[in-house]
Image (cartoon, rainbow, N blue to C red; front, side, top):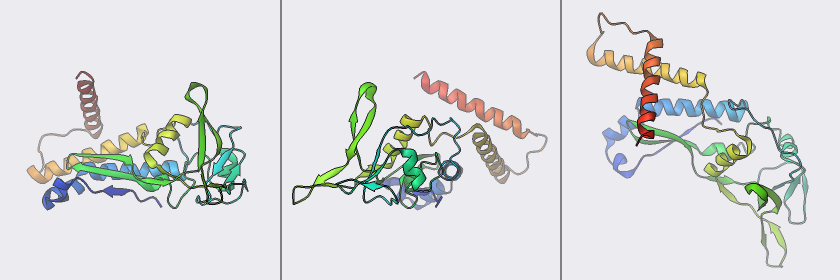
Length: 242
């Protein structure tokens, strides 16, 4: 359930076996994959939010596509499932509140991927599409939307029939952020610290492998973390000044 995909890099890298092997086995790729797995487990299984969570909005009816793996709920005349609120929908599905993981077999989280560009660069992103909830929205004041009915099509008899709709997983993740204030790819301070320690430990092993034990030099792990943080801050500042 919590596997994270490694997305194959571009054609140029794929055609160079040694470069491809170096990229897929690089510290950056392994660190990104580890972080993505941790984030997926924390949110999709535990519903543990680092940025807080405003909870489900009340008073908004939910229309669910007949293709969605739904149980419970009434059906309207189009065949769409209806629930009185998101909270009722998630409770019916037996989902832990705030996990954003209703369709566990092939929903948004199935698209979480590590995209490898080179041995020095990789990133985490939601890729692909998955079944949406099948709702048609109407914009109201302040750019807010409200569900006005199921997503539908007209059949041969001229009757409205509820229709499934594939939605970008990146759009789903963006919607979670916009509606709940939770950025699903934002790590906690503890996770960043753990990742820094792991990367610095890996770098130390690489240096020793290349040059042998470094005599007369002992740098505390905490100092390595401080140096790495400082370097990251300086990099961000340099980019901001461009």
